[in-house]
Image (cartoon, rainbow, N blue to C red; front, side):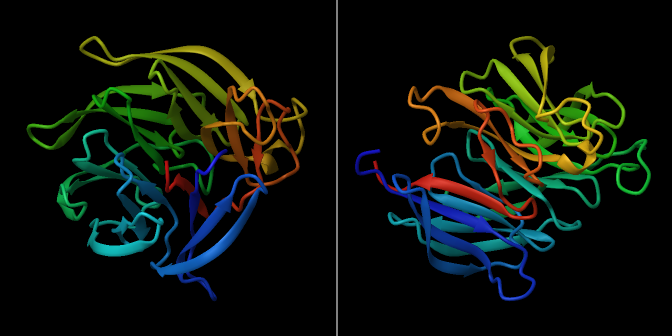
Length: 303
């Protein structure tokens, strides 16, 4: 890995002794984390880094906070804003650095916050509440927006709704600063879509389902007037198919990353984070044994 240095930000709920975001130095050769310091953030359940790498955004109770990142990866608070809703669960930034998107699991809301050139957070530009009913009693019977992510061409925003088994796709109207619903990717009932990610070339989307324990692969084309998603493949995240205990193996996180710890050829693979270690993936899918309620983000701090 040469002289490259990395820092990891681990967001936590602030019950007990935790203060918010834990900052770690990462030794990729030894595979170890060394805690450097803690940053006070109330219930930092998810974090996101700006596209230029200068800022770190974090959930903070019923709002969001932003921090500058210095050359060593240390954080300094800039400001925070309220999102006029319940605590968010997922953050995403757009390619242009104009908007911060917030997913609301508890209230089924998608919030758009304006971001200034200096990294500071501005006013709320738009807020959309999802409507509809799911099919699973207790948890999945109402909207739960679990993930928001712009398409790689920055034309659309995908809002993954875990409660009503849908991915709602919004056009980002940059003139009006509004979200316009243009399509809905309807998923199988009781499948529980949770996280969506796109390939580096922007041609493919990977959608993780926590209840049906699978990953679906779609082709993506945004060249026309409306987005086009075509299902190409479905693959289980279970070691044993038709596992009677599959409900306890719900997948909760998905990342596309360079597999440097297991594979010498450095080819790209899907990383799948599990809530439970019972159903580890095949060798070509690297398993992160991390608590599902925490967020972790690793960033390079030197060339």
